[in-house]
Image 1: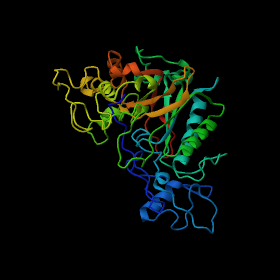
Image 2: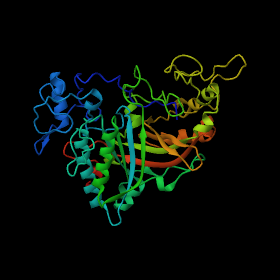
Image 3: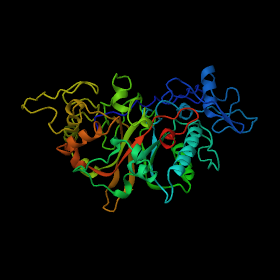
Image 4: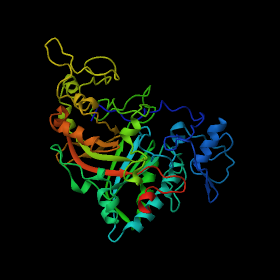
Length: 445
C-alpha cells in the first residue's frame, strides 16, 4: 500500500492573487488541442484561462470575470489564485484523472442502471455526463439547473472520470464486448467485503483542489443520472492541499507514512504499456483506456499507533520521516534487500510491505496508484472509520493488481493493521475526442 507513489507531485505554495494563472494542463490532451466554445453567451473558463496564460496577463487585468462569467461590473474583478485557475482538459487520448496530479478532494461513486434501462438509456446518460464534465472542468456552470455551489471558484484542477463495471454489459446487451480483463477479481484472504459498497454498473471518479468544486461536480453528475441510474455507493476522500508543504513531496497517508515512492512515472519508457491499453488492444473500444481497481481499505489506527516508531518502520520497510529505505539513502534510493545489520538480520524485514510490493519481487507487476484518504467518523465500536480509498490503474489487472495482492495475502506485515472492506473493478475507456462522449465507441460501435 505504501511503496508505489501517487502520480506527479503537489504544486508548490500558491502565489498571491496577482500571479498570472496557469494555462490548462495538457494531461488529457497531448497535442494541446482545446474546444474554446461559448455557450449561450457565456465565455468558456478554458478559453478565458488560455487567453490569459498566452498573453501573460492575470485574470482581471482586463476586467475579466472570475468564476462563472457574469454581467459586466463597474468593480474590478479579483484574479483567481493559482489553485483555482488550474484547469485540466476533458477531451484527449486518455481520460483525465489518471495521470493528473493528486487533488485535495475526491468523490468515488458507483451507479446501477435503473430497472428497464438498457443500452439506449446508458448512451444518453454518458452523453449527458460528458457534456456536464466538459463544462465543469472548464470552470463553467452546469448546463441546466446549476446549484451555484462553485460559482465563485475557477476549475481548481477538476477531473471527472467514467468507467464500466462487469454487470454493465449484461444490463445493456453488450456481453460479447465485455473485456476478458474485466473478469471478477479473485477472493483474497484479507477481504472483508461489504457487497453493498462494492462493484456497480457504472463508476465515476471526481477530483478537485477545492472541496466545493468537487461537491458541485458530484451533485451535477448525480442530478444528470435522472431516472436512468441510481447511486449504489459513494465514498469521499481527501489528500494534502497543493502548497501545504514548503516543497513538493510524495503524499502521506493516515498512518503518517510517505505513501509510495515506486509508482511508474510518465517519463519512464514503459509507462504507457503498464498503465494503458494499447491502441491496437482488444477490445477495440478500450484503446488508450485503463482498468481501475477500487478498494476501501480501513486502517486500524488505534492498533497502529500503539507501535513504536521503529516498529512502524519495520512493518513498512522505510523511514517514516523521509520515506528512505531502511537499507539507507534517500526516498528514491534503490532498496538493498540483502543488507544485514550487526546482528546478522535483514535490515529490511522479509515481511516488510515495501519489500513485498516491489515490481522486481512480483514478476515486474506494476500499477499506478492514485488514492484518496478517508475519515468517516467513529464506528459503533468507538474506533476511527478511516483509511485509504485505494485506486490503482493498469493495462491489465491480471498482470498488475492481482499478483501483488496475492503476494501481500501470503505474509505482508501491514495486513495486521488494515482491512479491505469493499472492492470494484472497472473498465475505463480512452478519452473522448472532440464531439464524442465517453464510451461512445462501445455504446454505438
